[in-house]
Length: 66
Image 1: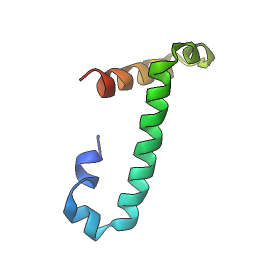
Image 2: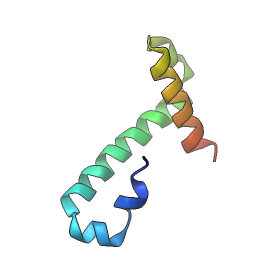
Image 3: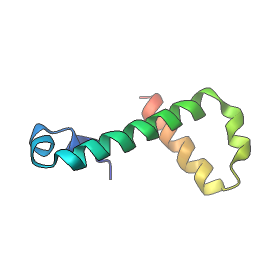
Image 4: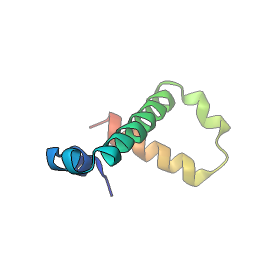
């Protein structure tokens, strides 16, 4: 489930400011990691898990190839 539309709403920002702030931090960190993986493909060599590689690859395509 993608949570950005929920936490981006003004209503949630007002009613749940702490949770909104936490989500923004996690989302920013995640996007920075995905951007790094997208720019530096050699980082893939350090990942032993095929599932994790597939998850990162899918996420990169979702965020950066819209």
